Image 1 (cartoon, rainbow, N blue to C red):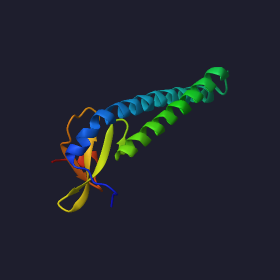
Image 2 (cartoon, rainbow, N blue to C red):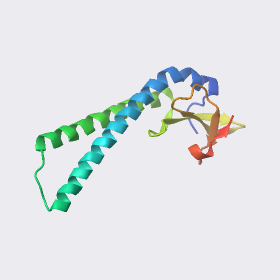
Image 3 (cartoon, rainbow, N blue to C red):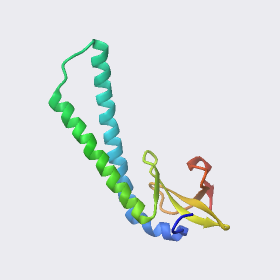
Image 4 (cartoon, rainbow, N blue to C red):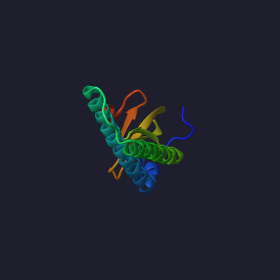
Length: 133
C-alpha cells in the first residue's frame, strides 16, 4: 500500500511541474539510446570486418555523453518520484500515481501531453489496461 494516494485533481495540479521533467527525461533517454545504437553499429561493423580502426576520442566522447545523459534521466526521474509519481515508460512518457478507487489501490495514469487525468488501471495492469475514470 502506498504512503500517499492522489486524487485526479491533485495529479492535475502537478502537471505543470511534471511535464517539463518528463520532457527532459524523455529527450535525454532518446539521445542516449541513439548514441548507444551508433556505438553498437560501430562495434558490429568492426566485428564483421575482423577488426578495424576506432576513433578512440569519439568513442570516449560518445561513451561519456551516454553516461551524462543517463545521469540526467536518473536525476530527473528522482524529481518525478519526489512529486509522488511512479515513472513507467520513457518512450510514451507514462507516470502512475497511487489512487484509492472503491476501496482498492489502483494507479491514476498520466501520459506526457495530457492535461487532465482521465484514466486509471489496476496495479497488475499497464497502459494497455487503462480505463476511463
